[in-house]
Image (cartoon, rainbow, N blue to C red; front, side):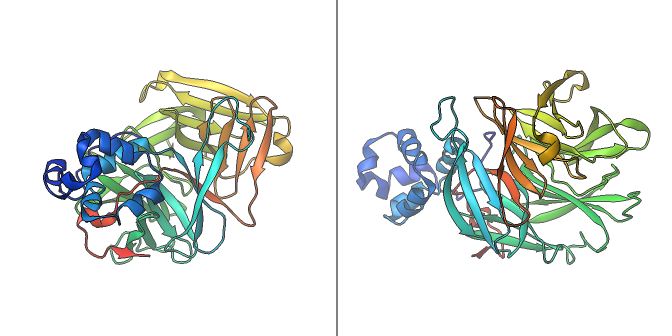
Length: 387
């Protein structure tokens, strides 16, 4: 995760803490930055317990410095919803070329009950999840599973989702310069013609919605890929045979676009994600494998590079589908963790050229996630609730 300005937490400073109660603590004999580093490497549940030790530790663990340090030191992992009401599994990645449990690549951390009985993940940044209620599609929330707080939006009231037949694409991220956290909803009122689109942006730091125009043509619901403070979606251009990538700069809230290397009349079987600090397109249409395209220089259409991966059992286990496959992580040994939108999670083994499934009783949802102690209460918003 990219480092960002974390002005959003409580304004207590390290100097104020150091010259008050914390000077009586054993850690007071260490420099502030050393204390922060030590505590930020602890497991998140240990940190939460540390908040109950005394007031000085509570104040320390809610400073902007500590929240930022903990996010930077958090081990990336996954948030996985496998169809059980409200329950989400959280994992952390393990990497290396000589893992004993080589086929797994991740460790289970915990299982947490979240606000919605059935909710899809629409984005994640800095330990916050953006969820959509499957039972009530007009309802969304932003929550932190570990601080157990959330804020909910009824988009019918906000006039964001006034047409129940509208196609909706969305995303969640933080701007690159100021670090403001923003949820983006793009509504296409004329579905399936898709000749009118409106974008709404919600900023956590202000608690306000802003409406901006958006004219790109989406032909399916999708989640924005976050990279360089921008959210990206695959879109269609009626005047260009190549698939386009539309992006919104979360700092300026302005849209721009550039071309992909694929010539298609739809986005079927194509997935878009951010991988290894690059935009990555996954083309799942070949019969004997899949293709990953990496944009090596961000925004440079000439920098797309192609990598083809042959999979011996691909045509038997992964048939072309309307939704696209998205790579989540490439491990040091070359294995790739992949997500087939709302269908399944699986590994591609570079060595064996085979796939391994993570099974589920029903449709699965998964998203790259890091644990954090960033509380929604620190934004000073009204209507923040606990769960």
